[in-house]
Length: 394
Ligand SMILES: *Cc1c(COP(=O)(O)O)cnc(C)c1O
Image (tube, rainbow, N blue to C red; front, side, top):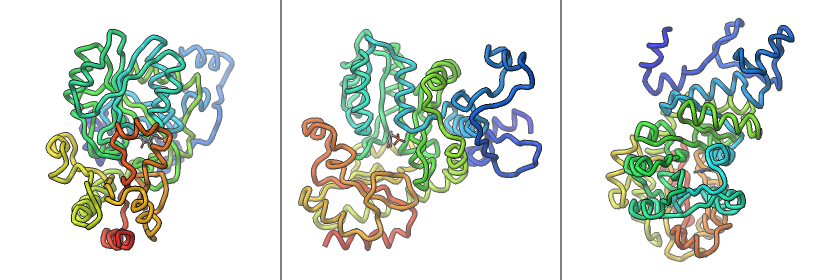
């Protein structure tokens, strides 16, 4: 197989085949390398590896063959030059910020990001002299006004968690580059199967592999994808020094997850589409947030930017927190758990769980009302999911 053939592979072929290395044993499935360190044939070879003169493995905090297979496969799917795998999605975000920012720098982030990302930026990066301004995901003017001389990075998730707001990646990439900033996109909800931010102009893509990349709720992991210099050298440099590395076993689970990613994202999207339409006609339910609904404010943008709408839905119960908790407690199939992107459907009450550490003002600004319920629609039969929800709506 020549390198040229690989570059012409389409998405699903890359998802199944990219990055695989073969040992002399002739195995068909990807091997796991559960080893902390690697041996050298001589003292001279050890010295050459450590000095960087000769390439190769040294220690699994730096590189590991199973982890590298995952990194190369994900890079091929996102269209990036380099990928660095991390122990979790949060450590991917931390590694990116720690590698690319310094005290005195400023970043602008969407207000509608994962609650823990807000806490990381405000409480921890702030303590090291990196200040973050929070803006509306969908208001480009607000992004522009928040940019200062020392702004280095714009950070967003699209669609957002849990309200599924959609940002115009192309427009924000242009804005970032006009001001000498990097655009970093957390692509957790869509995955490269539905959206490729690097092709739309973003500089760096972040993943919580814990979600759809695993797809079955088994392992924690994350990844940073981008160019050779910033990701391949700088983010990798932080990772091998600070140590939030991915374990080879988890990398193997994620590699196998990538093989079915395209199929699963189509199926999640199809189920979510049916459920969102159905929910919008149920009594006691106010707004339904799903980019596939024509009533969604960025429906047209989502159609242009994504190849499908994904598996996340949220909706407001008119009866507020009491009605939301009653609905959740009546469910027998959908699991009450904070994870998302699983084959099993999951439900959360964002105001008291994922976004519970935000102040009430921050929650109100992010649009997280007390009646809001989020569902990550799994791969069960959608008729069973409807019946499950109907029980709680009665
Ligand atoms: C879960 C999540 C994260 C954090 O990932 P972990 O693997 O739990 O550390 C980051 N961003 C988004 C959008 C998430 O949903």
